[in-house]
Length: 372
Image: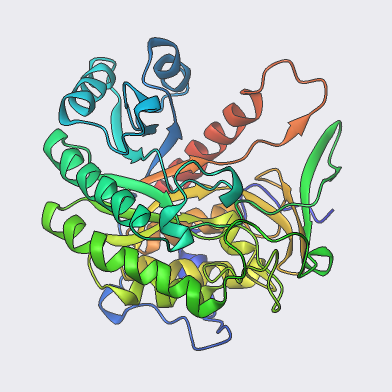
């Protein structure tokens, strides 16, 4: 494998990187943000449960900003939002430990496969079910605003995370793997049936037109995770995933313009969209970062490109992690950078060991960026 050096670029080097273009138009940054930031604003973050054990698990690594699941006391009731009291109690538990809940994950719109989704109405495009689910999202937005929680992370996924088994990694690890040539168009259809690009965009647009105005009114950022992996041109399981290309992401943010409409920007997923992540990723960060469309960052690496890739350790993939952090600094990114997806080892007794490695890695890269 092509190993990358831990530190090989400064923010000055990142700023001087050539602006590559991708299919469907260039990726020039917004001109008003051309000046590089003088201060690092981002911070390391983590997913955490709001319990004594869960908060201590991140605090021991010096992490004080988290993403948490919505605290719904009775999930069996089918309630799709947390109440203001539940959210305030959740926030108070975290703040007593010195932790800030920066993002909340709702009980629907997860990255799961549609056949396993308990509330699939929005992505099935099926009314009145989707209207009830959208109303739940609207209520969650209002309640987050009342409780002082500034952002919500969600997915607009039908196929979930697409992978095709595992391949050997370094030492005794293994990596999840994907090869687009193996993604046949017509395995059994999902409960969604055939979903063309137009149908997919209709469902996204229906959701955004009803949710983003509420988010804008209540000043709660809505951070959408892109579709995680590309689908072949002919689709996969009958579905044409539209948020698995950079052009798709550009269209998504243009549908309902708002400073509260943007991305949970997973750089591993974005790298899966590119033919040469090591050259192209940084300009994608610039495009969305200068437009202030990045509300959270998932930080993981791949080895390969959109045709075939493996999810590898953060220090050995196709893009340079230090240069990525320098580029986030350059565009003035100010929110969390989070570990995402563990690399597995058969004999590893502690599943948090790899996460601890990545948390430390991110902290070191941020500190390095502060020196540049």
